[in-house]
Length: 66
Image (cartoon, rainbow, N blue to C red; front, side, top):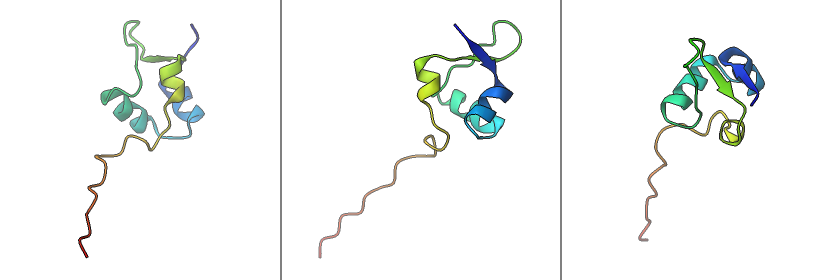
């Protein structure tokens, strides 16, 4: 399986490396640190992730009783 490092992945997705780490922390992407260097495998889950989709909680809908 093909893999890239964090820097290449963030350039590919046009976002910061910090964004990539945060997404990984929340489980949107998997970072493999077993080799000592953090790399990202180009599997379906990691490629389908888009920066900006992991921001906070969904907005509360206000119900209008007018």
